[in-house]
Length: 243
Image 1 (tube, helix red, strand yellow):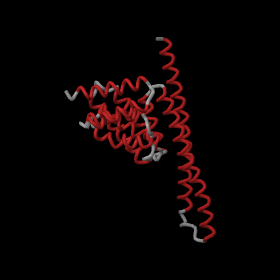
Image 2 (cartoon, one colour):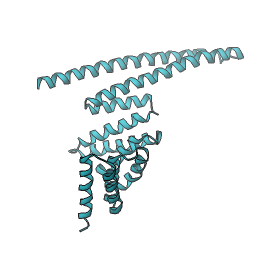
Image 3 (tube, rainbow, N blue to C red):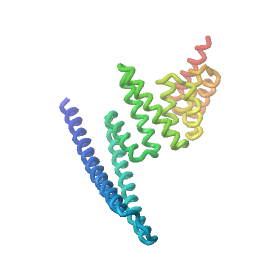
Image 4 (tube, rainbow, N blue to C red):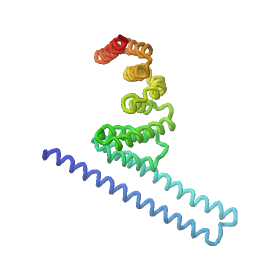
């Protein structure tokens, strides 16, 4: 117990230090941004520069500084992303979710961040089985995060699989999973896990024949005995359900 306690304390210290560094970096950059804004306001007190030369000089000056602030903001997002990943790897999912959301604030178009946010929220939801309201909240958050990731990068396979798991096993919406799994298998051909999940989605949607065909496809594709046994067991379950 002492070792476990020491590990938790150590992780807490690491997180606190990382957050302090990020907070200091953000404060410095926000301060620099405020200073820049004040300089721009000061420049405009007497009206904007009138001559072409003066205008070009002003544009050059502030474009460079604004570009630097944009780069700084992206770098801050990268720091949050690294912290989120480290927290997630250590199963500190609530802290990781907060860090992913901070990273998305700085890098809203990063599709992988939205995917990881969805995965993290889904993991938290599964642990909230004793609180249906909270569980529903986190499942909804996961669904929206996966969909945002797909919107940003339709050819990124992971959120298609993630949201399909959500629809089939958590939300009871197997029909909603089918188009995502179809797309997933277009992007990750011959993925046996994807094929078996699609078989489950079809079976739960009442499409027994499609499910059986997918089980046969999975059996033909893999040499993994566990996967073959899983597919055969599922196939027998479908056949037995007919009688």
